[in-house]
Length: 138
Image (tube, rainbow, N blue to C red; front, side):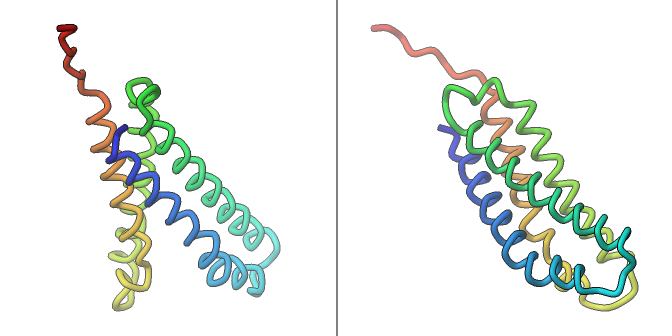
């Protein structure tokens, strides 16, 4: 078992739960109640649900890739998941760094959870791609 990928999958599942529960309350419900026109409001709401699905599916990919029969065959998929989580974390950092206002790195703390999942997934993929030494039959 690849414990690095297992830990990444547990953290990814936790992040998914936080996104769905806390994000549903703090972001999605406020978005729906906002005065935005229907098209941008519902487009953003659909995008929120797309992110929910992608987070959950990536957690499942990571847990499956952590299991011995699947490790070597899923390295590319895990690297893709890792890159998506890293890119998502960096998006929040860039937005916080480039928008006016103070304390945005803490007002947009998603990067704190996104980046570790990406790093752990990347490290786990590297661990899965290393050939394992053969044991002697003696």
